[in-house]
Length: 327
Image (cartoon, rainbow, N blue to C red; front, side, top):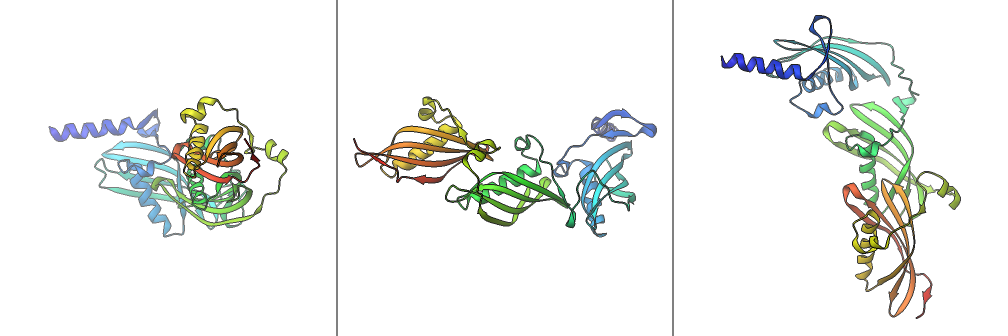
């Protein structure tokens, strides 16, 4: 009796994972989302890992499931369509797989691989690299591979007292995961804009991100007007006085960081004369201020970087050699 109840429960659980769209032969659309590979309880994960291992022996990489249907038997059958990379070409494949309800048995059958490349309307270049269209609002999805690459790159630059501004161009290469060849703008140690290049390798289901081939080229020469007119340029930030007092806003956090840093040098900010902001992987604030030192009023400038979702606040540049204002 107990075994019967367990068996029925397993069937009910499996059916719950399946879409309501029933097809001929009891096959149903099977719902899955990006990152399913990290869920070891998902039968699709077992198939993915086993199929990946088998295809790697044939020089095939970057397996991506595109559609899945399932059929409840004494376990589950799966019909899977997928894409893969071989000899720098993206192609499509098909397989039939079986997974027992206990998950102890996983079998791969009827693997079919296509010979012709899959165009996918992509501009495929030498080495399997293709132009990558940056998704809108990708920064809001922590599981997005490009967002993971951006956060890792930002942290690498911060360790060198630099700050990521924005992407200039991105190419991708499908491997056992995803590689990005990125050209980007950054603020160097002197607060000046430069161009950088790097390669970032991401396996999102393992939360693995690695930055390689990171290089910084010469300064980016642009007029102030160009900077203001382009995405990522500086713009006037209209702050409230309360932000200087409570530190609860993004700018308030930047100002508090600057103020506390100066207090350690026995320097007190008297007033803030101007603030500009720049949207990057977070926000840069360029703060012009008047400060008191040795009974003299002087002018100063600072750039403070804030990445709210990682609670990062960093002073990128600080200039305290401005004109002295006598009492």
